[in-house]
Length: 82
View (cartoon, one colour):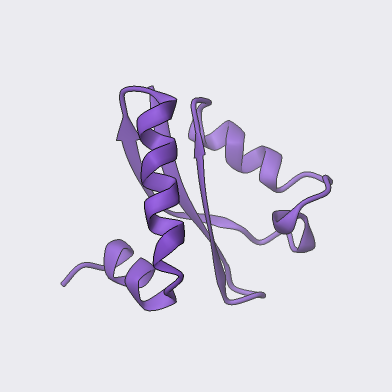
């Protein structure tokens, strides 16, 4: 099983979009540890949204689609549908 996920940082007021074939909680834990990368800037990331896929290839395609939106408003519409 694979996932596309969106993290949110209140400090940065930004979203982070990623995909994994790992357990979501484990992936979030790794984002919150010391590492080199975008999510290492702050330690307040929370899981705001996720979608489940049968394999990592499908999840990766969806991740790219969401990232190509380049729109905070579109991500918020996905997370908070009316």
